[in-house]
Image (cartoon, rainbow, N blue to C red; front, side, top):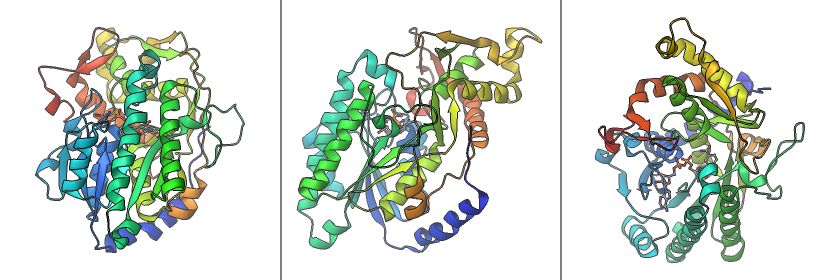
Length: 389
Ligand SMILES: NC(=O)c1ccc[n+]([C@@H]2O[C@H](COP(=O)([O-])OP(=O)(O)OC[C@H]3O[C@@H](n4cnc5c(N)ncnc54)[C@H](O)[C@@H]3O)[C@@H](O)[C@H]2O)c1
């Protein structure tokens, strides 16, 4: 099922675009929301590593945040952290006034579909009210900039393929501009946030761009999402709960490829435009779990031995559980616009990205403990600040 870009196409993308950034000597200050989260932290690292950006990281540090993912950035010139909730208008205004950013990448969100089904209120608050608050504070700030700064300013709304709703098998991949059809409370609140952002462009001329990313995976993802949950459960000899028959299809994108896509949109994207960022690598959930178990047999044979010497492999832990209500069958997006207009292509294959991800979770498995409700939490005795090192 996997379709990967050709090596020739990848070479083109790297040659044509990377030197542009290296040569640029203009340093742009980017306010990143949610920069202590899984994707946000990868983005912050990428922005700073390029040398072309300074970063103000605005994050409320919810349960999903992993400040340790930011390593020793706090000592780095060009990096600042503000613990602020994006729903807190006066605090946001103070951050804009103090740091005077040239751009915003808005990645803060409540992001887990299952939590949104159990308790949608927090999703409405952060994803809708928070995005509205941020848009208004950013627009007021932008309105007060001089003409040159105003025309350079950008606001990138980080969104998801889930806003488009589900596809059937064989249906054409979604292109930008397709109608929205969100099915979960999470997707509905992300869709609402996108509509607000789009309207702020259309009504106020506020320079909004929107990215739609496929399912991400990589280090530092909170172990409630498929890959880290299965990995930690497997390493502890616990059941691997697969929804229904595990036949749902997702497109997988390594987190650093997403971060690079966001940076390219920021640098070369057009206000009012949206861009799909997809790995072009569709897999059924059960296939993902099989690939993960197969790699863990190599990476962590001790887990298997602990259950019973010479016992069955990790796949024997798989258990089918009642399907998630309203579970979308398939997401797939066409990332042709990002490839053609931004020179973006994912650099990582699923096999290699999964290997890197699993190696990281194997090395850090002891940092989490069961939360008593079937999930995981950071170990208190290890402490949040070092939980993910
Ligand atoms: N994870 C994926 O596969 C995926 C795919 C497509 C799009 N996205 C989008 O990418 C963005 C980042 O996703 P992620 O997986 O890194 O999420 P995450 O849950 O790992 O991190 C979210 C971060 O936002 C912060 N945050 C939450 N509420 C906040 C608030 N009210 N104020 C300030 N900060 C707040 C959290 O503390 C956390 O650091 C989200 O907008 C999500 O919708 C994620």
